[in-house]
Figure 1 (cartoon, rainbow, N blue to C red):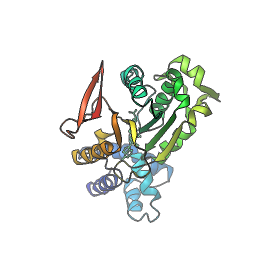
Figure 2: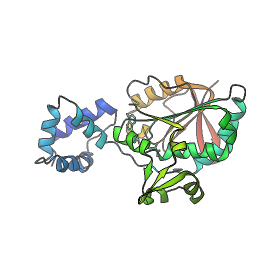
Figure 3: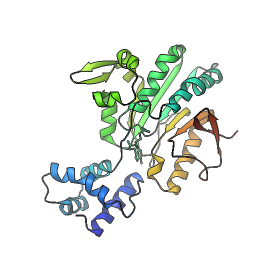
Length: 272
Ligand SMILES: C[S@@+](CC[C@H](N)C(=O)[O-])C[C@H]1O[C@@H](n2cnc3c(N)ncnc32)[C@H](O)[C@@H]1O
């Protein structure tokens, strides 16, 4: 069992390092996520783990704990419709509007284990062959080092493949890796993976035509959401699109974004 003081210590640490809110009532979640670390490190209990955290000079245990508190749920072509919108409406429009300079910059800001950004990359490969003659940059970032390593590895279990990846894309863009599947190297090379805290410094991101920031704002308080959306705005090229998760919105947070409805997907664009 986690004492109230230990919960408060973990809550503050996670907030400070990731902006993820752990409200009262989330004690069970902290226990669930931290118990494997207690086991792996051969510690007595959660109390001993928190004691070590308090004196963790190297910061490696603190990082491990913060990463353990992230939720990395994702899948290929998650929610389907945003990717249909991307293919049928958003990318054709961007390709028309950027035809003169032939530059397209994409950022996926909460990449988790990579399925989302690889879904984008496969969409580009599969449906927009003309982009072979463009300068296309795809950057994918996540707070979690472990997730970024997984993204680079691009190795997925059959179970993960079964969650949303069409068979034709599996055949075309993956190769066998023992019992798993691995994305082909030429697709892996399309993406620049980096560790990055959305609540920290965003140095080095390009000006973007397309930003995917899906299913991550839900973990933050409104002030952090506002701050992040403001920074996203500053990063977007005129006419660029922001994709959020289906339960996320810019409404009441940032009035400089306008909603654009495509069939069954809401996207966001900076007002002209
Ligand atoms: C639920 S996943 C969403 C993955 C993907 N975007 C999707 O919609 O399928 C949330 C991801 O956000 C990341 N995350 C949480 N807080 C973050 C922060 N402060 N900075 C960057 N990434 C963060 C987590 O590590 C996790 O991989």
